[in-house]
Length: 317
Ligand code: RRO
Image (cartoon, rainbow, N blue to C red):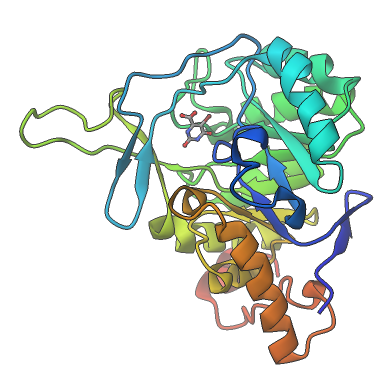
């Protein structure tokens, strides 16, 4: 089965990417897995200024999931341009790199895009409008407020011809219309989903298990939520979708493809098994051989949704 596909005008050698916040800027994981065997990576979210991040502990296990409040720890725009992009240009030329962008205001997003636009070493942007651990100035997170989302995306669209992904949040009544708003505003693709807001309380101290209090839940417990979100977004939009949430094995990635995602990101699984993404690429190839498919694109959106009550009532399949 052919794993490659052309999206956003460029070739992806396979549909598996590492998710934002789980692979740094590539260099951090270069020694433990072969990044060149993947479809691509999404960097840690970049902010205008460097951020040291939140108080420890920043990550705790939560049953079949993980709760984090990293607090956007990153070197900031200037050092990303000076140190991270040159490394990515040299070492990740064969895979597709998206720089994740985050900010408190629309202007911060736009200034980061402006600051990166003339640089090399990456393909496009993933606008992180859905970080559960970093409030938008003066309101709900961008991905929970369609007007705010629209403003950021329209402004970014005016600044770049590069592929522009928009990353949405799980905690909305229906992600379909939010995805639709992102497409209308100019997004080339939509990433579904970021982590789900959550809280774990330590019984001894009666304090939060995380240093920062609440955090974002990720891992296998989120997979069905992510697959459903991709299915809803597929019914409401036409741009390529990127599925993320709870992928640990081949079958999980296949579910995202069947629901309508063209690309699938692996995040939390990498912490337990740094080679999880490579394993899933190999597993998809094996599945293709076994089932006699010609191309991975034959899988995308092949979910039989006819009997799905939500599709029947809410969607536009
Ligand atoms: O850095 C974080 O705390 C963080 C971010 Br930016 C995000 O988008 N999602 C998340 O779960 N954590």
